[in-house]
Image (cartoon, rainbow, N blue to C red; front, side):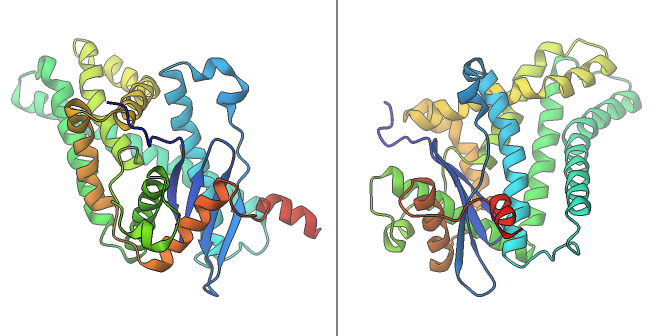
Length: 309
């Protein structure tokens, strides 16, 4: 059974705010130090609209995955500045850009280490030490290790004060999207009553990637360790594309199969989302209304800086 209230609106929690993205516009709203809400547009090219071949199934998931990383990086950086959590780097934008790029590369490298090299290295170490081979089960072992690392990581960061607030905004984002998809007026009262567990959540997507990778890389379980590891890195975008299709399918349909597929991701959201307060819901509503063109928003900060010169 298809879901009548399925929409193409998505979002992301950012520092003291929420970013919402509709087919027409991407907008971010942030609670500033003076307790007001700043809402501004985020310029981000939709390459899938410009180049139609990028909308082919699986390829579109690969593109969406890359876009979400870049857009998330950009909006989190900007929100940190607006919310007062990050001081300007003495007006040196070049230095600030370099720091952000290095941080992104470091984060990507750390992710590869945690979710590719450590599971593979642990398996190889066990096989060498105990003189046996996991054989076709090696992808299952590595998958279990990856999931364990991911869950431990989520539990640990969830204890941090700033991350707790970020997860509250994550909950506000989900509730607001649910309210919109239900066709209800976007008010704090209406949003508050909705669930904070959404099937199209990015956290759920990461978990689906891990599950799909267990099945996908089983195809290469007979390859030598070096070739196998290289393939895991190179083919990660393909796994992301497949996972995107699974996530979109479960969001559009409601039956026993899709509920089973989406259940693990929703369980993870018990860690990655918290119940928001009314102030946080107001921010999410402002972002949603801006993305839908219901309210006027400030131009992108790049344009604001140009106007000030």
